[in-house]
Image (cartoon, rainbow, N blue to C red; front, top):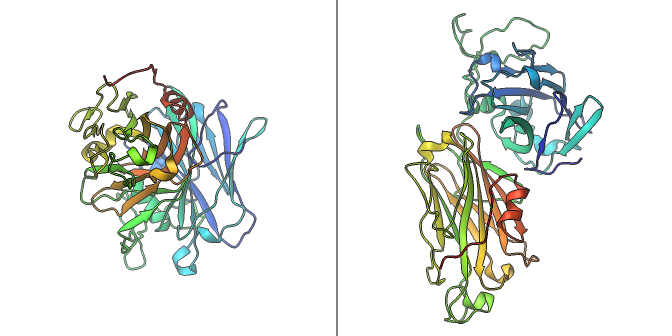
Length: 407
């Protein structure tokens, strides 16, 4: 099975090998695994398996050159996810990044051979990658083909997963009681010397970033909390004065009723939908910490429709699927030129254009937000479905659907 970015599959074997293969050997790549709790952070340094700590204390995860071996039967109960990562050794000094990699693929092997392969491409300045995630879902293990890039190399990854690292170039090793992890790249050495690597310098961020399909970008925290995430969906104005969407969809009597909505999954396994249909508008300050501002049934509101996510409760949300559906009127996505914007304090504005126009299906999955510790990754999806139930099955949500009306 060849996996695409964002695809999730069940893991039906307990003993697995995740191996990074590539055509060129110019890049010196190190792989690692972070065993994280439900807050996206490791419980201790021992939950970071890499060249300096090759075996997890549980025996459930081992580092073997370009491979990570996993025995799911031995994973401790506090571990909710195993993030498999790759970094380039000394990338800044060597002026290397993952745009230089060729033919890279993450392969998954079980007892009887290869199970799946996940090609890795479309990277630019990244020096670290979350290759994929092994995670618990309703008592079972699954794999998510992630392919999310970071700048800042190993230090950025460690900081993201709750491990403090520093550099010993200017400073002596930390005393034995320190909890700072050793990231010194001496694979033959069994001594874990305490070193320090400075966090990567903050780069000047662009004000806006337009996402490619399948591309993931992490929102940046500003301060101790993530802040409110504002997700807006809007369309082109018609040329005739017949309602906001009337000219676009040939409904001159009063415009189209096109709804912004989302599916949500919380860390306690609660699932649901936020949408005007059924008056499920949600709540910002109580579960699910997501709210739809309102429902524009006439198409006359130039600002479109908006969903808000309370970033103060990011640690309680597992994932959010932003979608839209046409409640009434005919589908003509090309003339609508739909655009989603995602705004969060401290992050550039993320732009997701609904730029695949061939479909006449009435439901579009636009973007997927997934918890990555204390923030979210945002991925452009733009896939079309006959209805919400078909979309639900494609993303393995598990809701039960029935026909409804606003009237």
